[in-house]
Structures are given as C-alpha cells and as structure tokens.
Amino acid sequence: MKTVNLSLSKSSFIRGLQCHKSLYLYKHQPELRDEISALQQALFQSGTDVGIYAQKLFPGGVAIPFGKGTLSKQLSLTKSEIEKGTNTLYEAAFVHDNVFVKVDILHKGKMGWELYEVKSSTGEKDVYLDDVAIQYYVLKGAGLPVSKAFLVHINNKYVRKGKIDVKKLFEIIDCTKRVKNKQDSVKKELAKQKKMLEGDIPEIDIGKYCSAPYNCDFQGHCWQHIPENSIFDLRGHGVNKFDLYKQGIVHLKDVPADSLNRNQGIQANATLKKKNVIDKDKIKKFIESLWYPLYFLDFETFDCAIPPYDNLRPYQKVPFQYSLDYLEKKGGKIGHYEYLAPPNTDPREEIITRLIKEIPQDACVLAYNMSFEKGVLKQLAEWFPKYKGKIDRIISNIRDLAAPFRSKDYYHYKMNGSFSMKIVLPILVPELSYDDMDIGEGGMASEAYLKMCQSPDSTENEQIRKALLEYCGLDTLGMVRILEKLGKAC
DNA sequence: CTCCGAGTTGCACCCCTGGA
DNA sequence: TCCAGGGGTGCAACTCGGAG
Image 1 (cartoon, rainbow, N blue to C red):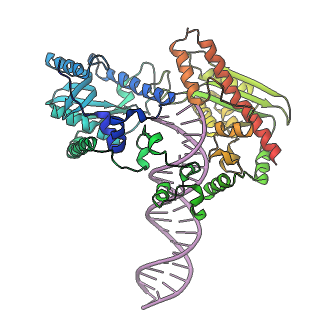
Image 2 (cartoon, rainbow, N blue to C red; image 1 turned 90 degrees about the horizontal axis):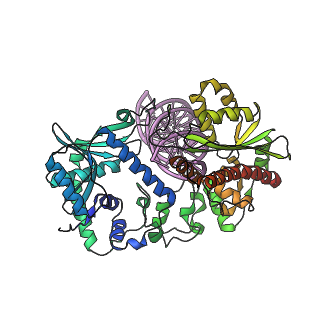
Image 3 (tube, rainbow, N blue to C red; image 1 turned 30 degrees about the vertical axis):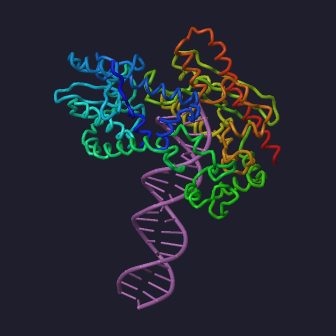
C-alpha cells in the first residue's frame, strides 16, 4: 500500500493560521511542546463526546475509525464506502494538495454531499469558519461533489424534557456561502504555510495570538525570555501589555507608574518592593458588615454539554456536593455539615432541601467569590420554585469573602495580582495547603465525580469520595481561617 | 468549555465655553 | 448666532479573572 506524503492536516492548518512559528515547531520540533494539563485533556474528551453524540443527527452511518492503521487505510476505507453507496459517514478521511482532513459527519443529501463540522461550543466563532473552509477545500479538491457545508454547535437554550431531542440540542448553521468566499484565501494561506515549513524557523515574536483563539503549546518555549516580575504578570485591564512590550518595556520596574490603573499599580508596587498592602479601615468595615451566626458555603458542581437530567440545559451547572461550616458566635466552635451525592442520581433537590434546613433564615452566609454560589442557588430556585422564597433569602444574606482581596485592600506581594482562593489561602494560612491533596481544584473535583458516575461500582470510589469530601471541606475551613486572619490584621 | 460579576473602554449625548 | 472642542455622564459591549 502506498503511503501518503502529507505536509499538513486540518488541525495544523488552523494552528498555522494562528501562528506560523507554532506550526513550524509542531512539525519540526514537537519535543518542545508544553505538557498538556489533565484538565485540558478532559475538555478535549468532552469535545469528542459531543462529536459522537451529533452522529445521531444522521443515524445509521459508517464510522471511519481513528488510529486504526495508517492514514492511507482511512482514505481507502472512506473511498470504498462512498463507492458502495453509503450515504452517511462519520470521520470520513480525505486528502488533497497534501492536506489531510477528517469530516465529523458527511451526509449525502438530494443535491449532493453535505459536510458537517461539529463543535462542542455554544456559538459560532470565526476560527470555526476557517475549519469548515479547509475541509471544503480538500473535499472539493479530492473530487467530491460537495453541495453544502454546515457548522453544528450546541444550543444552550435547549432544555431537556425526557429523552434528548438531538434536533433541538444542536444548532445547524448553513455556512456554504461564507465558506465558498474563503476558498481563495485558504489556497493562498496553504501555499504560504508549505513554503514556510520548508524554510528556516520563522522569526515571530510573542503576541496576543499566543493564546487566542487557542492556547499555543509552545508558550513555554517562546516565552522563555520573559523575566520574573514582568508586565505580563499584571492582572486586569488597563495597559496594553503588548504595546509596552513593543516599546521595549518588559520588566515591571520599567513601567511608567502613571500607565497603570489602581489595582495594577498596587500589584506592581507590592511586587517590586516586596511590601504588602493592608488597608485596615476597609478590612474592618468589611468584617463589620458580617454578622452571626456565620455560615461558610462552598459548592462543587459538574456540567455536561449533553444534559444528563430533565429540566437541564447544556453546560448548566449541577451541584453534587457542598461543604458548610458555621460559627454560632464570634470565636465559637466550628460546626460542619457536608453532603456528597451518590453517583448517577439527580442531586439537585436533595441539596437544596438540606441547605434550607441547615442554614438558619437570617444567618450571614460567606462564600469565596460569591457569584458562583449565588448562581447555583438562583438556578436551584428556578428548578424548584416551591423553595424560591427561602433560597432568595439565603442569597440576599450572602457576602463575598473574596471582596477584600479583589479590591486589594488586602494584598500580599506574592499574590501575583490574583485573588483566587487557591493563591490566597496558602499565603494567609500556610498550614492549610492544597499541595498534598488528590483533588486540588474544582475542575478535578467535577472530573472525579463524573468518573464515579461512569463506573459506580469501582473499588476506587471510596477513595475518590474521601478525596472529594476532604477538598470541599478544606475550602470552607480555609474560609474560616482567612476570616480569622483578616480579623487579626486590623 | 460556560457562566458570572466587575472593571474598562468606546460611544453617543448633553451642556458649557470661547472664538469668529 | 454658529460651531468646534472640552468635560461630564450613562449605557452597551467587551474583556478579564475566577468559579466549576
């Protein structure tokens, strides 16, 4: 069997659109790639899940599997299926002009072949159009009569009632015209990329394209010359960091002070002088705005593109766990409630009935970055209107423990501009740390819970449960300790 | 990947002022 | 009397950072 000599694939073309240097390194020095985090891997997985689910839009097709044999085998398999008269193919493989693509769904309609590119996102983006355009280019070039090209994405307005209605779950956008208009530029860009790949490594400096529309895998390589305490450590809006960079300003110490906004100014000043900011009056005011009994609430949630239960929209957050600590009075003993739903049950009503029993009507409720907890509670009120009154009452009593850190009334020079709990807690309360924990962030927590749901009988699950309870408990205990520290600071 | 709140920015709009 | 430009305001659009 003849092997196919490929210079490009669909994904590398998209990569090249973002940055030629990234494509060059990917082709010639892949060992320089950054490690991909477990979380990113999980997101990638959810994308393929959606792709497979979308196949139900055109059931009964034939799949051309990945990884099974060589690329040329996938090509010949595709060819023979088409010749056989198969009218729906999943992951059909084509090559033209040395570019290899796989089409999520290829369906033979009345007017000819239709190509469908499935995205797990909830809306259209420019880069998706390039994605469809390159596929159209290759299919046309390979001699397939393509009549229409579509973009398929998740419709996040869809509410599940009973069995999933695939036609409503997905939104299908006809982008044939726009894709045709792009053909010229696709051809030109391809030629450019190929020429570039044959030459020396292109000299491209860092820029916004390092992280948009996608995070580049070579940031660790290209950003090596950026020192510690650089302008890129500045958080928030304000100065255009790449404008400064182009002016040759890289280190924080070289930034003209008047070009920074308030928060960035505080950050830069604290970092350079290794000095902390503690605005005692403001912190005192914050603490005085709280009252007892004082409850500390933290939710863990999961979300899926394809809603697992009724009355659920795509990507809607489903709480499956919470930790609730409380103090009856100032300096009192910490009380603790917690709940972790058993796998594969709809946990929503159980969670809210427990919470409204455990949180007294007029208690002050603290959350860290409260918009998250408020949002979950609002959602619960929508799902269960019978509890709306009580839920709204809880919501109105929520205060945000992140507020003093967000406003930089309390800022430690090691915070690097961040006010995240994961940064703030180890600095204020070094004896509490996420370091040695099996689950150390929210993303891992939801991943772990979904894993339990996938294999509910696994012997591992007892360990996962323990880790989940430990993690969520640390978040609320951490809040108690942070508040204590704030109190001592003023 | 989505969602949310908060902060920023851009823009339209208003009034005021001063030059012609 | 007209208009351009400065300054304040209020809204919408956007981005960022943090949450999962």
